[in-house]
Length: 354
Ligand code: ADP
Ligand code: MG
Image (tube, rainbow, N blue to C red):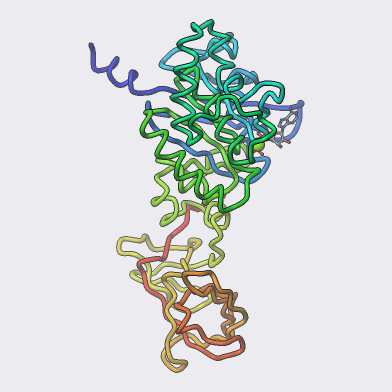
């Protein structure tokens, strides 16, 4: 085998310059999107509503035609290949089980389409129900299942034909938070156990970060950033990504050596930051409370209990409000005067674009 064949064998999905327009005018729903997914990888596309996530999945599935660009699966161009010949599985938010069929009938759906033998179908259904935590549920009626159980059946149904790529569109969107948090951990374990390659989309950052090996953040049909959950969380690339993740301490700054001049005074920047104007993200973790005379004087405008910490909104005498975090026992009261100082470690210089 040549080196080239080796590299492409690893690459399950490649999107090259994929563009989709609905109607003649306006911005495209997908705007020259390039994306690679490696075999066995769990990639989660994260973005606000309308950023093009579902369109991306639909193009890969062949349910939506691209106006430009290519979709390659295992190196093969998929243009003209119908959905049922792409070897991909799709699970939507409204997972739509067949209400007149029992659990086994639902899970076996894709296997019947493939004309697997009855014995094979039964064995596969039993294995999958074990995997998704519903052993022995074959004969149960769909209507008797809870929301979380229905979600598991829908997942088993999507996995049954062993798709080379499993695509999930807001798979846990309908469920309440506790169940979602549990299921997402189970899903990750399950996909790793099975070696399933997954392309999932969600608007929920917690879900994306818990599920993914790699996160792709979308904005207006374009990829704003891609990286491991830790990379994206610690180093949002742009102001859009920072704000989408809930970071609001973003200011104009001018870097001079090891500090930046900001509306909050001098803020230290990481070693190696280039001099000049930029936008700066000061993550709350880099804001430290000090006695009033030692730091930038602020008034506590709001405090919110977050379980593991208290989120503070601080109003300096001049300049925009600052978000900070502190331990519950150290949290000042609303209206109290505090000082703040900044540490370089959680200060991020954002890209000029966007
Ligand atoms: P997301 O899944 O991120 O919420 P979508 O991919 O559904 O976003 O939509 C991206 C953009 O394309 C939106 O502006 C949406 O209104 C538009 N769009 C999606 N599907 C259609 C369609 N069938 N006809 C017209 N516009 C569409
Ligand atoms: Mg969508």
